Image (tube, rainbow, N blue to C red):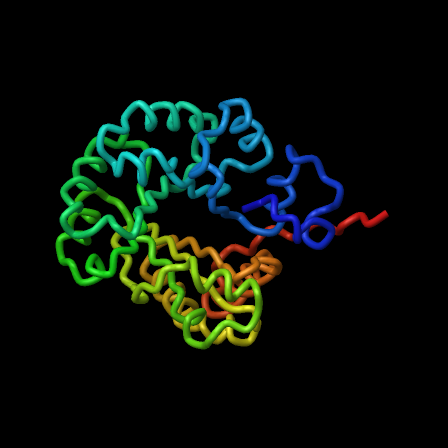
Length: 268
């Protein structure tokens, strides 16, 4: 999520080598979704450059590769997992969580498979699981399995997005691709992770995240350390919106450390 074309020249300098874009993004936000790892396990040398561009306390939530979660469905995928874990090892403490995003067909009958998979994960890695099967949101077994494994349940809140019909090409595209799942606000661990999808209209996006501002404040006062990712259909202003969300939370919890101060862009 740190190489979006629409950010170049607005949030990061343009042109900017690919090997410097994560560093530029880290000047705006202190956490990132590693979505690219879903499509291919990166070379260890590439991952080493990610480590060199970020501070040790930078949070990376890395999505497990598609062969592990969607093709093998967490069964018999240990060779792929070993290759992935070896590749990302240079990140060290930057790996805030391994993101287990499961397909919509992964339902209640598959929870025992998830339980076995989580038991086999190396203890040094925290897991965060995102499910999309509607029945899992009323299934009592899943939360127990995650809690027992020290894993978090990652909500992807699309309720604000689906509250009104799409009004742009970006919204229409997202309308056909994003899941319609219930909003879930319970944290299972000290490190909740939330993904929120707003709309093209900034006022609607901000109105929709008020629930999460309050939830973040509650979690921080409980001593938890939440991570939030703010999305819109085209993500064109996601870095600024993420900072606006952080500002809203910090207004209620002044002890929350500030985000890094973005560098001034050089246009010429």
